[in-house]
Length: 248
Image (cartoon, rainbow, N blue to C red; front, top):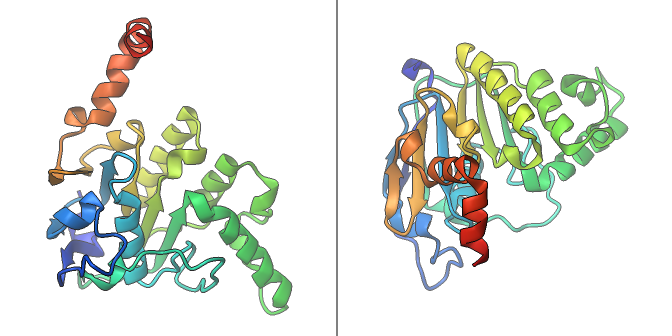
């Protein structure tokens, strides 16, 4: 991979978290975070619900200058202050390279980002409307999945740092495959992706770093050794047997 084009090379815990004060104290990612070195242009953080992968991604994004609810570094809106304080305790080790573009995509708050784009355009009469950078059509007028793909196709320009939190939430399997082709084209343009996901389709991206977060640690794991891959494969190979096992 294009290691010389990485913008983030490592995430470190810079100080011990005061577990008496912070509500994130019980998350596996907090209990096991020491240092995570990134060596690929595409990095996945995976784990069960409640493992803290989205909390870690949010902390990386905020530490990197992005709005906690998503968007570019120029977005500064806040619908509700709910982000964790993990960003205060980590150091994001950056390379000498600086991204020319960037975006933090959160599936759960993307509606708020689309609303903010419309608000910015309604309050400004100077230059081209912001929505032109997002395909020219209101993201609210599309399905959730269509708006995600439109965002990546039109707004992500390359030479960028793109942090995506569970982007598969709105995407069909076919659209997830389409997303892989978009990611690949942007990697060719010296982009870096850091993604939290459950999707075994997205995780199949060649030569990606996959870090599994669980009670035992944050472990770099080969794709076909992840639970996401093994459980999905086992289910699809014999769904009747799996159903019988589940319903007994």
